[in-house]
Length: 325
Image 1 (cartoon, one colour):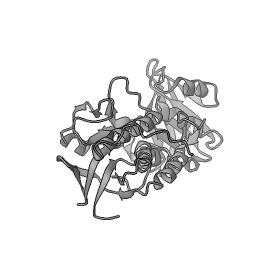
Image 2 (tube, rainbow, N blue to C red):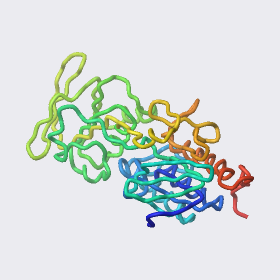
Image 3 (cartoon, helix red, strand yellow):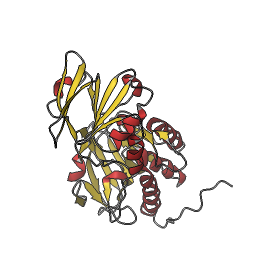
């Protein structure tokens, strides 16, 4: 990994959309650098839920997160991207001929265009209240390896897709699974809710965690119905607090980008208000935006094809059909 470099395109963020963008840049015969603050490729998928089944990617009825990343990495490698892993993009300046990005480690990368695919930026889990003492003692906020919970009685706290997915993924691995959510309705996908309710998962709503007890490891959890105040004591050795994450766009907020709350505004070409900067994936906002991995793939192709004209004036937006001859 060089300290400095010049490329046609710099992609900031090496999650699914960024990896596909790296591949597609090669498809358009562009030299490409791929940068991420994490030390490995894959973004949130690899870092947070590599064992979770992903159900909404074209061509795969179901695929584990890490398997999807592995396939995307293999595809991206055909473009021979230069990798800047463990580098957070800190400063960005744009001029008439290109964009210069300086990382927190002092590397300087020059590109004719930039695509930001930074997901939700820097992310951190929302903590389970009054439970910090059990972090590392059975309390976790995501499940990199399902086998770590093999043979355990597991309590999953939350009502979103991650909570539902982990509850289902632990079938046949955990000894028992209990799902607690503070509301009677779930935020997760309807199909996932239906599967949970028809499965062997014990579902408690509207329940919340009152107290975790144990010594070096969790031994039990007291939960209560927030309408009737009824309490139950559950024998569990592991708690998965799937309460979502808070995001921090960090340096993105200092680059002069037009933002809406915690998202970067783009037009139909995926271009930001900066002439040579595009953005794709969960980090972007536009009317009708749907935050799915599958949507990010399409946005990456749109951004690359429109960036091609910025990188090489006169280049066609439509690259021609991609089927083999």
